[in-house]
Amino acid sequence: GDSVTQMEGPVTLSEEAFLTINCTYTATGYPSLFWYVQYPGEGLQLLLKATKADDKGSNKGFEATYRKETTSFHLEKGSVQVSDSAVYFCALSVGNDYKLSFGAGTTVTVRA
Amino acid sequence: DVKVTQSSRYLVKRTGEKVFLECVQDMDHENMFWYRQDPGLGLRLIYFSYDVKMKEKGDIPEGYSVSREKKERFSLILESASTNQTSMYLCASRPTGTTRPHGYTFGSGTRLTVV
Image 1 (spheres, chains in turn yellow, purple):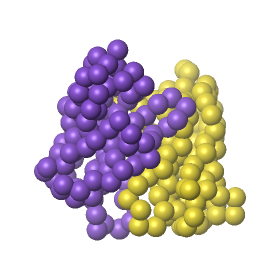
Image 2: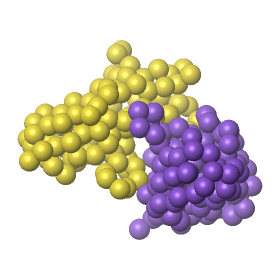
Image 3: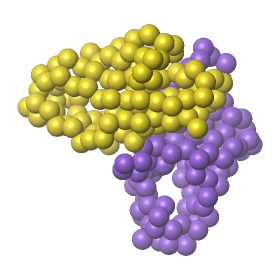
Image 4: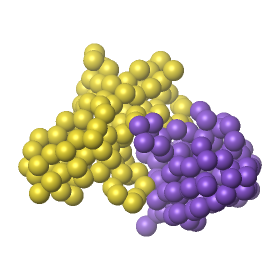
């Protein structure tokens, strides 16, 4: 079935460090890909998305590029801040399916 | 501001109790979802509904049921709570008929502890 695998955490970084969270997927069709973020004590928020190969999603300094050849959608940010401390989820949906399939989540902690 | 509201942030229930988790959205969305979130497992879909009185099983429906009597409200029911249902429960909604894909709007979650 359709699934997402993302790198395990936790990840601890210093402010202004570079962040990468790896995400790879398996899908029967052509998926749309998402990154969600969950700040402490809150629900999930959509961070960025990409709907077709080579699309780049971006938001709040984060970027991810839909790579069909490597079935990947890695999340990157060039200079993290303490406020980026959160749990990050990669997700996909396929075709007309309403459902999202989520990865296990990666906890990121940024230290001042 | 559009919202998905879950009635409780924290709940503690006893084994064997019948538990109701309520979710209300004010966006007139057709589709609503219940997920549970567990460390290392991500979010797993329990049930979803694409219309009033309609429901579909997700990936882990065992031990749960749902009710959708009104468009804005989607309830998750634990018929007889067990300790392995201790988890964070997240409700989400999504419209139909918009340009796909459309992101979900999530509630803040209900952390349920079954003792």
